Image (cartoon, rainbow, N blue to C red; front, side, top):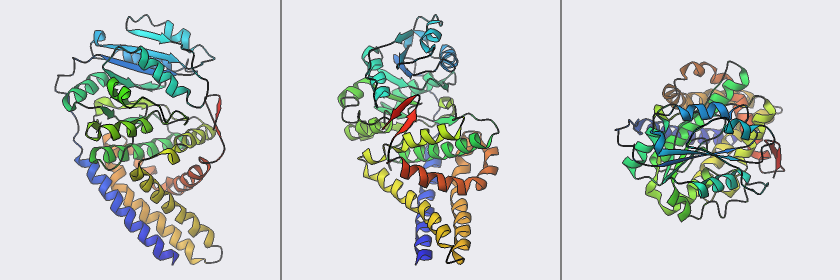
Length: 372
């Protein structure tokens, strides 16, 4: 019975990954048409204890090809205890503003920081990124051009992890790249909503129309996907994915297993808050699929043949995922990472099961805060 359940799940998974691959490849690579230089943009950066990173981000914003008079940079200091504010002040840019509002130092402080930035923003279009990111020079130009072409209410855009050759960083880069491929495929096809707060854009009026983060501000994370769902409910035809190499934002991986675990636990903690049954169904299916591998390993203690079934599970799962992930890797110019992909399969399954379970229990630490 367990074998047949596993076969059925793998067949269904194969159909799902084939769908994602086709949706990914059918999503057009966007090329600027040169009409983007007309929208005033407010770039909002919530920052907490980012003195080592914020300078590099501001330098990449200073080097943007978008006209300087058409965008402003608002850094919102989220109770930093280091020299983040001093680093920001050292940049003498006429379009740079440092905001240090009195925020509520609680679970949803990042949302409060973004809200504070939006209240100050003069732009028609809000663009958010994180303080540890690096931006290509045509980032804002591409976003603005796409926004004007599509008349979009909300835009999800690509993110990748920078990495060295360490085991942990390569694992994160591959895992996150796969998530980004699913994000592009799901949003472009209208299958379900996904995004990442390191590279988002939305109309300021769209944010106001859904009352911002009201109703989702009790959750520590979710300044990205939970907001996206609210805007999608209001304007489903106005939600887009921007598939363009000119818009890829690079962000830093976690440097320790502990910080990696806490990051992924934070991401997964909002799962039960989703009201979008589409993504809940996909997440539940993938979680159960990974649990099957664990069950096969455990039951092999009294049914040794299940060890062979577990090995077959790994091989089949890798073969199912390979065409999709390798296609995404080409877009991100990360094809060399694919040689590690089969090696990480067991670890990826175990981490998915453990993080998925633990994220719904207890609390976690993030940037010096203990969060429930």
